[in-house]
Length: 133
Image 1 (cartoon, rainbow, N blue to C red):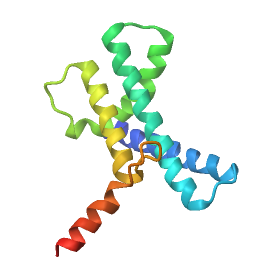
Image 2 (image 1 turned 45 degrees about the vertical axis):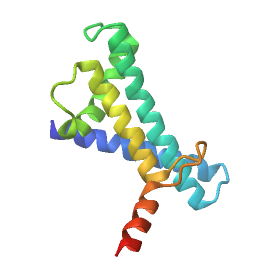
Image 3 (image 1 turned 90 degrees about the vertical axis):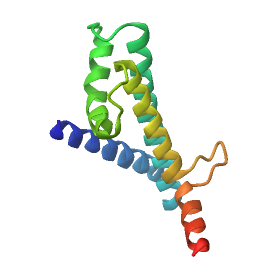
Image 4 (image 1 turned 135 degrees about the horizontal axis):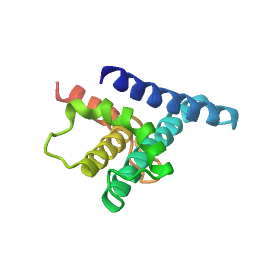
């Protein structure tokens, strides 16, 4: 399970670096590339996990459709990455939906959301904590 979680971490890192590189090649400034790359990478991973959960709900977990097999192979390491904080009572399709929520929340926490106008929450939490003391 540990090697699978490490593969999940590698998938997150490669996705993030690829998104940042894409924005840099496209001519975006460095800090914009960091924020937009993180937003796009974590949103893409959340969408991948959400689509797996939705397919497991509608099609079933044990189907061997080629697209679904590839989707499982890519998203299994991501599920292993969040398995330590996933409740044990969730049914299989809900585990994927829960992991998608965690990746989306991580995106909001680290990078904010430009479309919704949400600033990065870690900046707000830092300001709240520093003004409280």
